[in-house]
Length: 165
Image (cartoon, rainbow, N blue to C red; front, side, top):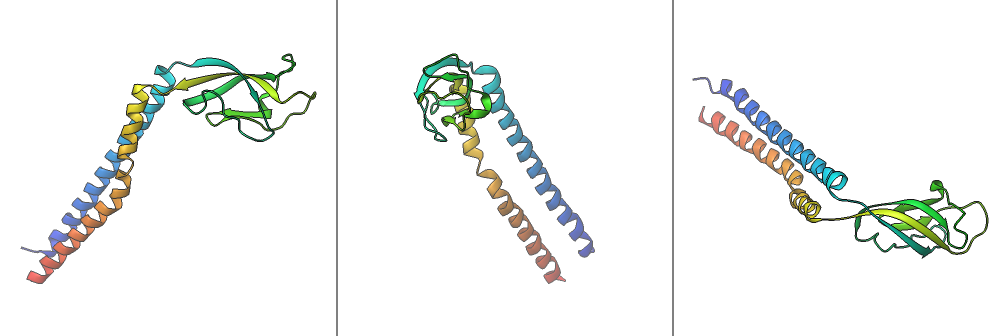
């Protein structure tokens, strides 16, 4: 039997195995990410809150629900003393870090603003998905080790085949 002719099928089998494992992991991770997004968008209801906060230019102010929410967006920001003055969207940032007044050109107003914002709190489904994603986050780091091990096994097999000749 020709041992040299058996090398190529053995190496192609290893390469195909590594490719299949990689594709399965990538598809699995994409499905998990999409399920987490679906939970946020479809199953967690938004809560609306109005809050008055004191602001400092270009500094984040923690909102009541900013640290406990997984999604937060301001729907309306008004001057704290004259609520007729609406502050434009480009003048502030409003997210899970809190509220930051970036710039404001217009009438002078005091150091408070009235915010109306929507926020979503994590529920059991989101927490379960998040915990699962965190638990499997280390798997992609093992892929190079698995591939190197497979290559090493192939090389050891080659040495064993050629040593017998």
